Length: 142
Image 1 (cartoon, rainbow, N blue to C red):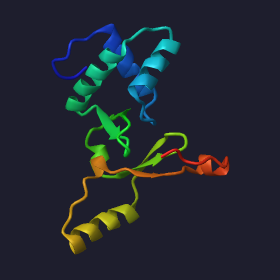
Image 2 (image 1 turned 30 degrees about the horizontal axis):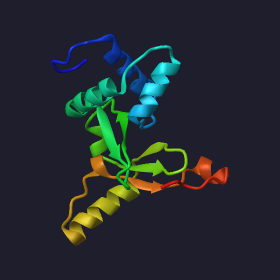
Image 3 (image 1 turned 30 degrees about the vertical axis):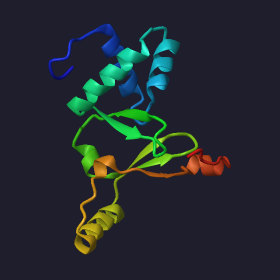
Image 4 (image 1 turned 90 degrees about the vertical axis):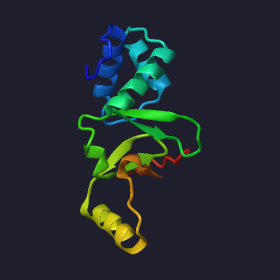
């Protein structure tokens, strides 16, 4: 692990959980629950504290619920990667998608050129429904 963080079995277990679920953003409760289902025990306070450490190291991203009801964390293999693209969140299943396409780069360029505003893509979050949830007829909860 990076930095001067002490290596413990619990921290390694939390990091493993995040890495195994790198395509999703997980709440502290979801992390704790998944670790518990795997037969390990980690307290919520330990997970919260370690998330703050990982945030400081740039190893996770924090997505705050627009309604202020909580936050979810996603493992970031390359901390600079999320600065280059926007993000989508499915309000039905909670899946996060990296939106890395030329059209959004053009939108960023337009916003800067015409509105003198630089978008911080690392904090971007567009909420809607993913294709799977639309196909299943699910509706968003946000």
